[in-house]
Image (tube, rainbow, N blue to C red; front, side, top):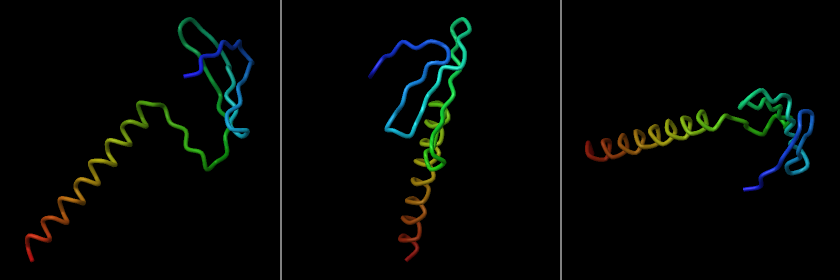
Length: 73
């Protein structure tokens, strides 16, 4: 992990096309802005983890459905 110190208004670049800017620091909260191409998905980590969990559950349901169909034959 790369740890950087930035001030309000400072930015970092990732991969030549993603810019992360510190918009505001208030107490223990930091507001950031992210500029990235439309094809780049950006999620808060807790949302990303929930999406991954739901995708795994959907995949498991599909595998269970395939097994059930095999048992019918």
